[in-house]
Image 1 (tube, helix red, strand yellow):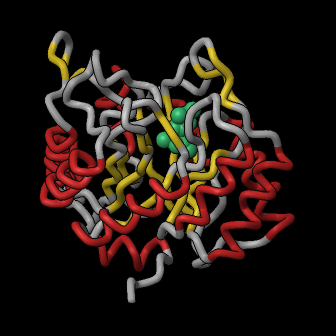
Image 2 (image 1 turned 45 degrees about the horizontal axis):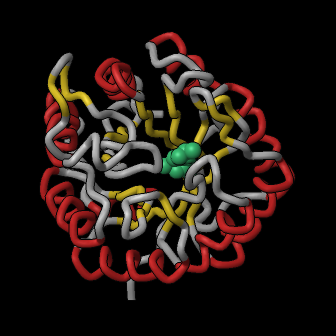
Length: 278
Ligand code: KMH
Ligand code: ZN
């Protein structure tokens, strides 16, 4: 891994956990999502990691709504559209598999079960294997979400048993600082990055107060960045985030200071092996 590459910035604007009534700036309607995605692209994002909400702002994996969301984000932005297959902890495996039928450019693919605060985010190996097979059938590029070191072992097992992903390139996201997952600190990030498959690229996401230290560590170690209101609702101690764009702006500023300015969407497509849109 070199540490002079431009920086891929992924924005995760919504997530499945935050409550719109408590966080009014959270984008939950399609209009809000497309507006925030446009702002984030202008600020330096190249990928949008998408969770959607229903008319009451509750997380949903409604298939028609997912397809409309992919279409609207493609229409309104150049961003790589990455749908979450993680959904909410209450979603069924069948619904999570069916996310791919909305034909996104990319999807998240979590490589193991993890305690998730007081909940359990369940990803047994047979589900991981089925989801991976479906990404290959449908030509969707997976991003391997790794919440803990066992997930890295499972990623190695998956690749050894089932070959390279669609697009031929392995890109991972180290999700750090989840209560139940790996810590969001420099030593953990360095150890996790060193354990990834050779030639993999990786981003890091620090949840909550680990967001900023994880960004500095990832930039120094040659990694890429994921930020957004899925992961961080406080910009600084006692100061709520006002919108996703300010999180992307901060990430882009740090990337520039690290002499690794933000990657444009077409550069990100080339790196990740995401097909050009027709
Ligand atoms: N909402 C979490 C339970 C993903 O998007 O793939 C799972 C999650 C991971 O957010
Ligand atoms: Zn997510």
